[in-house]
Image 1: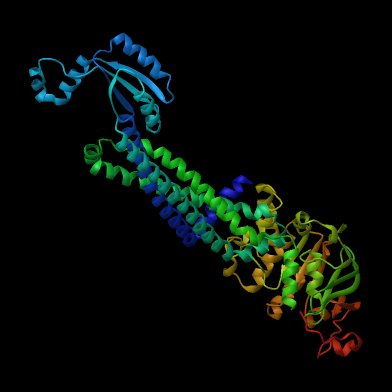
Image 2: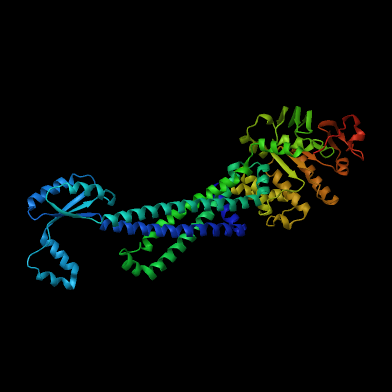
Length: 308
Length: 243
């Protein structure tokens, strides 16, 4: 039975070349747009994760009179705050060394400072940028704190942008999936419609609904598989070229690399296959429902209608 | 084989069959005649359970058709071979595939199909047309394919709905010979027709239906006068719109 269906699917797709090609083009086009959004949203996600990783630290500058022992105690206390991942103690010497490296060739300027002006500090890593605010409020209540710095506004803006982009991508993706189901089920409805007579003949010969549906279902699934393979391949190739062309610039401007195409390709294949197969299967089942109404109430209704 | 007991099927504005009773035995060859809209189609549709009767009992091949669920309809139809005026072959399948399809529905093995289909094509007289598509065949050849498909599963009952309606007299005669040959093997044949010459020549049982009533049931001639049944059976005539 399964062998029969698969063979039928290939035969029918081949014999209905025009329709099959039309369906494949339609699904492929939808999936390419989907692919573009997928690639963009994956990159936006990566970018925001990078930013969040950079900005999920709060630096607590300590007053000079706070000793390291006291600082260690404070750290223990801070670690009990909700949303705090870890704390690190940074001495003023360490801070100066880091500053020197950061200044690079100009680092020698710092040597002219007689005394290290930098304070000791506790670096608090929070779970996520979203919990940074709460932690900040609690930190202000601690004794021995000179100043607290964290990129509140940046983090907030990035959070907002990320959220917005994520919702926008979801909405657009959902919209596209719905549109492609509609397009596909309509295309398949056309093939089914073109074969309405065939279906009625099959029913006269005594074929069960599933027997009739089988080949159409396999046909829809086959069309879905072909389309997903084509669109996954195309998306991969296009994206690889895009990375070749602007990968470097993206790194410089955004400070974040693009997601490598090879890493993305299998996700693309799986997502497209899942969408393609379900769109093809749903499309064919939905579009055949009307034609498989063997329940003879339909025939009776039609007969009555004709008589009127 | 077929037994109708007091079967009534009414449509919104006219009668399909009214209180019709008839018995057709295994091995019978029955012509179903009557004017258009008399109820012949209703009769066939009721046998196939394409429509439901309002009342009465219909037994086909030992099964009470009126009580079959929609799931059982395919099983009923598999025991009945059907031939139509317009052949109704699957246009995108070859002759071989068209005939094989009726066996595939029954999940027959490939080997059996390969064995039986050529036999059937041989029987209907087109052994060398297996690779052709229906539109490459003449009307008579297409009807032969349809008959091969109808008998491939050796049904006990063969229903032919005006099988010669689209054929020239010569070809029609060949098709009738073929149906007679099939009937000789014990298959019950019910044939709807308007072709007086065929009925008269065959000298078989003739059931005449008019306005939903079985108005005549006897062996021999067509018994259908020029101008319709109204002349023969004025008391049964009806002015209702016909099918």
